[in-house]
Length: 310
Image (tube, rainbow, N blue to C red):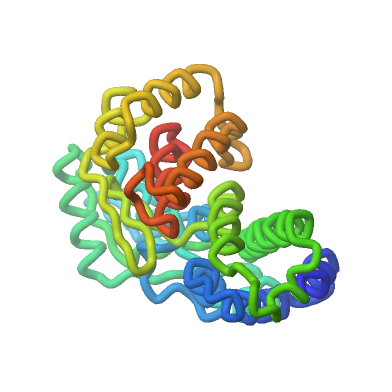
């Protein structure tokens, strides 16, 4: 089955949905809820946009009708610099929450070259109040976001690449998985733990934005410390909340001094990923009291916040 998934993923003419459906079957046979949840969200779409991965947030061009008391501009670019960072993010990050089949159809240009998200008028009123509080004498109406369909193609490419990396690693580590899975002696737990570990390494996750980190399926862990970019104190506090040993904390703090992430691909550094893998292994023998299913995604998100690559 892995071979057929890889074959689909390496052929750009084939629908990504086919590979995801086969992956859903694999996840079901392995009883792996983390992989199944991610695949289901990608196929059906994300009903909870707070769970959107970063690769499903497209760059948008906000537009509005702006009245400054003397002129009324229709469909004018909305300057996001007059708003807070949080508000600006709402205006420039377009949530791509539809399932992959819908995205593929839209990305083809069948419905035009641009997608538009129209905001309700009460949002326009809220933006007007914030702008005026920041010294801007304007009234804002008819706010909308526009993205080019190429942004959808980019998101689809990210999904394809992440799934391919996962399958290639599984193929390398378990070349006879399809046959072994049918055996009564097959150890699903061990394979699932490795899948979760690989998912964390290739940044397959369903956790969303925010200062709190929530992850896991049946087990949920929360970090209440606000993770500040580049701030070791907040990083240490967050790891202490997770009951990471002082020795392990000292080790990762030293690693972060030299192990920089790849900002272009939003991938953590090699040494950091190795440390995360080691911590996942510690969940297996009980020396770190966090559920294995939660550990990988939780740590990846924590370090992404620390490095500012959310």
